[in-house]
Length: 141
View (cartoon, rainbow, N blue to C red):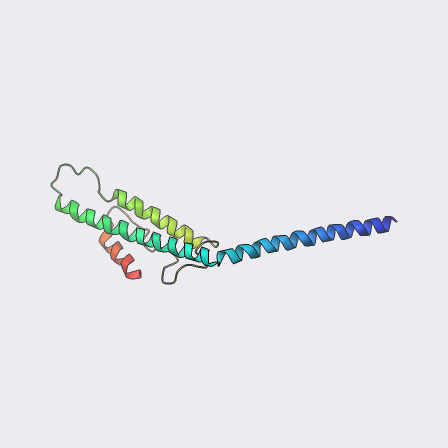
């Protein structure tokens, strides 16, 4: 009788373990299917392209601001570097782009072709040639 009860409990625990493991594997399978779903791929392509375009716009705006500030260099109203805000926007776009590209469940495996996995323009100092940064970004896509 004790053996039968022990056997029944063992079978019950084994069945629970099999169901638990199967559920765990099933959830990971579902997540993988979700990652490669048309909706997610479309969203990740949109996000990557949007961030890349945002980097281009920020670099272009910074380039224009530098050119304008050089033209107005004798203006007494210029008290700080006009590219600071554009550089901050650029860095935010780079961070979001990198976050998406590095995340396995976002763009890492479903990123649009032609876009680099890493942004090569992250070493931006006070003397950054924003016009060159824009030209480099535009050359990629």
